[in-house]
Image 1 (cartoon, chains in turn purple, cyan):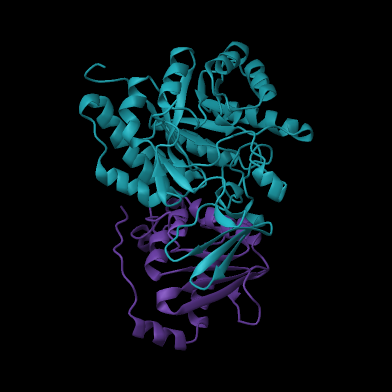
Image 2: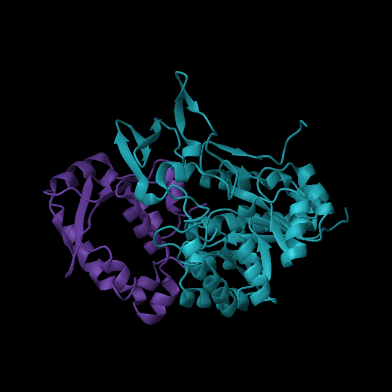
Length: 152
Length: 338
């Protein structure tokens, strides 16, 4: 059984977060994705995402992070254009997915992970993330703080 | 049955290197994989192995006593024949312990070109009787056959008793209409099928549309299903859709369900099943780790003390949690009627 306990963000927090600007987390995420390009995932796999817009909806946090891949890297994107791929889950389930404690299809079957838009793009991203060999990455890129939290 | 019994091999899926490592680390005897093209029946976007990654995976598995089987189980198209033979050559060069194939010509090519390469007959060949399996053995020297999920335990036993080929059966995973190698439903809706293109319901043809508190599934425009309340969706395949038939909407072909044969493990061991296969190369490392762990413990417990084996309720619950659909079933294995 997954070790991450079930939890949900209190509603007042979600109401507060929903009022805050979403670009700071989008900026941080974009910088992190750029940092991982070519180091954690192959550059050509990331470049194949160029021109695609994404939205991560953290349901219980009231947060929607919009970003896109441009020829020069990831950057936050606005609401003007609909994302090609929207993925929604709770904060707990996003963390469990990142830690590989939960399988994406398992959460999908339970309707806890919702995918809208370009399903082919969603599958490609899912398999890209599932294919990251964290022990090998950490052997190449010495990031001690990551070694304590990433899945084995 | 003796106090201890022959131990079937546990054959686990891997769609990528982390899943392969998860299978090996949690006790798989064999891991089955595919290349990144239509030579295997899970040719999904971003899934599977390039040659360098498979080399790493084979080294990892072999260092820990685990075998690696390469699925080359689609049917070559006339124009694509060199891609399939090249995949056979590549599997042999990389040191795969066997290839899993279905096509007669590809089996023939492998047997002639790589006589020392072990051949397993894929479920995609839909060989459901020992006469067919013996034909493949006599002609191509296959060493193992994976049985389609349409036979009862008695029929599996009868097959095993009449062939020299090792028999592998499915133990756990998503079910479909089980006419492997011959199903045209996906091709009808999308033009692509597992048989030649290696993909059932290609993701590019799938759309999940939100409904008020629910979800609607379309495959290339065809409305397949709607989900409301706590209903659990399955994979977006035509066979698992709900359709309007004569004014009634229901699962016209089959309800999404997962096979879970844990309860039948003593029978599978007793009748001489040589390997038990876990479905799911499309699933992630977390699934592979959890299912492999459960089945490793169950097989070890069953073969150590077959008479006293009983399915651990926690194991059953762990598998149910990972399952597609609302039900877990013994499938065709348990068929009290004749």
